[in-house]
Each structure stands twice: as C-alpha cells, then as structure tokens.
Image (tube, rainbow, N blue to C red; front, side):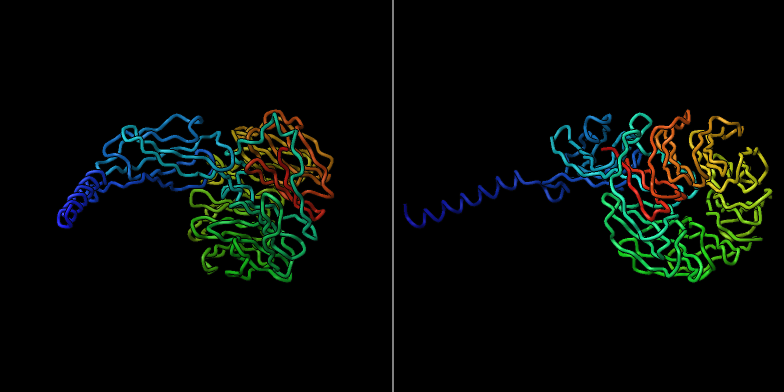
Length: 471
C-alpha cells in the first residue's frame, strides 16, 4: 500500500468514526444530557415534609417513576418535557425513620435512573417545640407507648451547675443554658461539647434556634438577650433589657421575649438585635411568649395574660387571673391554654380573650400546658400531672408524682414526658396516664423534656443534661 493510499484510508476511517460518534452522541441542541440527575428541595426535614424533585437528562416525554426507599411508599409518576426534564413534589412518608433515605427517579422508556438522599430529622428548636408552645412533636415515630419502657441513658453530661433551662435540638446539636453562666452546644448523638459561651450570669432561659442563630437570655448581673452563631457560638449581638428568665420565641424574623427586670415584653429584629417595639406589663414577665396568627400571648406576675399585636405590640386584650402567671401559654385551635398561681388552668378565646373554662388543681400551676389531639397536659404544685379535655376542661386522668410537677410536659406519639421535684423524669401513656417508664436524676427536674428523633433530652438541678434512647 502506497503512502498516498494509506493517508486516504486514515481520512476515511476518521470521517467514519466522527459520523458514527455524532449519531451516537446526544444532541447538544436537544438539551439532553449523558447522565440523568435529580435534586431535592428541601433535602432535610421531618416525616410528611413535601419536597420538590427536579430532574434532568432523562428521555424526552417519558414517564418517570419516583420512589422513596422503594418499599415504603406508593410510586409517584410524572412525565418529562421534550428536553428530558421534570419537576414534581412528593411527601416524605409519616413512617420514615430518622436518618438517610433514597429518593429515586427512573425513566420508564429510557431506563435512566438517578437518586438523591433525603435526611429525615425532626428539630425541637425552641422551648415547648414550636412558636405556639404546643409541646407536641407530631412527627416522632420511633418512641411510642409500647416501647418507651426500654429507654436507657444514651449519654449524660455535667454542665457544672443547675440546669433549669430546657434543651433545644436543631441540626443534630443540643443547645442549653446552665447556672454556671454559660450556654452550651452539645452534639446531640454523643453529648460532646462543641462550644460554650459565657454570658456572665445564670442562664435560666431556654434557647431558641432559627436560621443558624441561637437566641437566649441571661439573668441578674448581666441582663441581656443574646444571639449566637449556632455553628460556632460566636456573638452576633446582645441587647440589654433587664433580667431574662423568659424563653424567646422567633417568628418571621422577630425575637419575642419577656423581661423580669423591667416588666416588659420585647420584639427584637432577629438579624440585628434592633428594637422593633416593647410593651410594659404590670410586673415581671417570666412566661415565654407564644406566637400565632399575628398575635403574641404571654403571662405576667401582675396576674394577667396578655395578647399583643406581633407587628406593633399594641394590646389586643388581657385577662385577669387570681394570681401570678409564670406559665407559658399554648395556643391550639383558636384557644389559649395557660396556668396560674391561683391553682387553675385556663382556656381563653385566642382572638378576644373571652373565658371558655378553667380547671382547679390542688396547687400553683407554673408548668406550661402541652396540647395534643384534643387534650391539655399540665403539671401542678400539688404533685400531679393532669390530662384535661381541651374543649370542655373536664378531667381525663391525673398521675401523682412525689414532688412539685413544675416541668412542662412534652407529648410525642402517644406518650407524655414530664419532670418533677422528686428528681424523676416520667413517661406516661397519653391516653390513660399509666406509667410507662421513669428515671431518677440526681435532683429536681424543672427543665422540660425535648423529644425528637427517638431521643428524650432533659436537664436536671444535678447539673446534668441527659439523653435517653432505645438500646
């Protein structure tokens, strides 16, 4: 073969390869891709979260089957556009356990498939779970009345002094205050200290976590509201307002909190700490605000429950009880539930403050009510935990502890968790009040439990924070 013929042959081969390659390769103009991909938004959340699934690189105008861990849910079917893309929504199954799960999209004509991980996680990000102070984690699906008796100490960590503050758990981190003048961030799975911040005074207030920031107050000799970077504990801002026992609520970019020192309710810009408004009451505000439907609800030692405009602080209504109100209101189904030092639990119309009912216990009610599935759960100074019909205020059951039940109950998946002055943490059947589990800490439990991702977290006057989980 001559060199000239050889060169011609190589040209023919090269052209042929190029032609074949062009026939096999996807057309850039068509918008197709060699690899199918999907994205999830959000990619983290509790069971029943609605997440957007956005895919590309599939076959044109083909059916796509989307599954969540394949065997857990029914498939969701959608169709791609001519470019092989699609957007749809799926709901995370209510039974999806905490941890990673696979969302998979498969083209029924092309056979192309793509997966992404969805992290199932429930955050208990502030005192009494949510901005309404419901105390009810409706997403918990690990612990229940049939297995809670098996709870064991997963870890405990001593913070050096009393822990009256109630834990907040967000993004795998537990945040809590201590009487050793510090706010702590602990790894929720192990109790390892990530950071600590010294406020200079006792921290009775329970932290609230929102948008990567921890909000918490401090008591006498410091008297400030703090905003700390959740990841590092670095100070973003602080605001002087007098002694802060109240636990903050964060809603729509605003921090709402009460002051014991100057008897006011404050609204602060969550990003800057700037004052939006303040509203005086007639006495100290230890109660933690609840926020619902554009209103802020809070109690005061002047014996009143206040309803204020969240936007301006203007008084909407107030209700006079017969004694101090340190209990934090819970709002559910248009009703405000709150305890009083006059030994009673009250139900008030949320819009107008009209009296609906009251229930007399045998002692002061400083505990904050939890409301779940039409039942109000609350502790009393008479050592009892009560379950009351939310509509009528009638007694469903009561459970007697051996000390002042000042801890605020937490409700999750048919179980009520509460602490007592007798140093115990209790788990009670939400329907019957029967004892399912208990644990003796070293001292008075005023801290209110947080129940999330199959773990119960609570503090004790012994100085310890505890995490309880199934073996």
